[in-house]
Image (cartoon, rainbow, N blue to C red; front, side):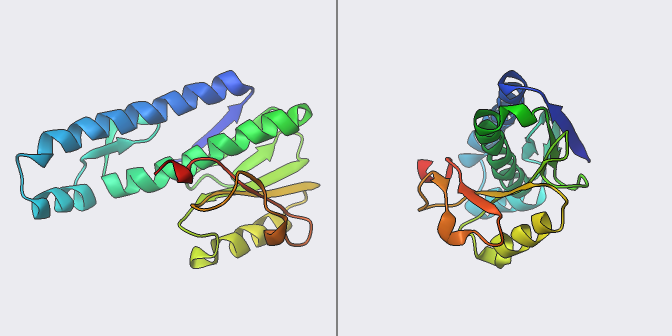
Length: 178
């Protein structure tokens, strides 16, 4: 399912976040209803292979929980990145948010002046994600190029030690809530 949205302001962003949290809450209820009624092996099997979870932006569409977790944190990272962009670069709004397999950079300014890639991982070097995302934004014509990420053990804010060839790298809130 392609998920591409124009996000005009923080209010639109908050509505997307609310949908994501609704799906998380619904999944938690599903897990709670299974925890005491099935074995650990059955529960883990259901979480991996069956639709015990829900699409992060459509709580009526079943999805396996592993996919929901991966998508939810990538989407949250995108939402947090948009918060930074609305604060730091409001003149570039609205922004195009391209989630999942939608073509283009993960976030683009409608005027074409900004391109950003976004990810959530255990470490920026996992699967060379940071390197790949830097290369992806370098291939765009945008003047402002960003990679935003959620990873544990990073202070919120710009990460100059990770920047390369003018690509701004920014750690987002989120991973340190554990």
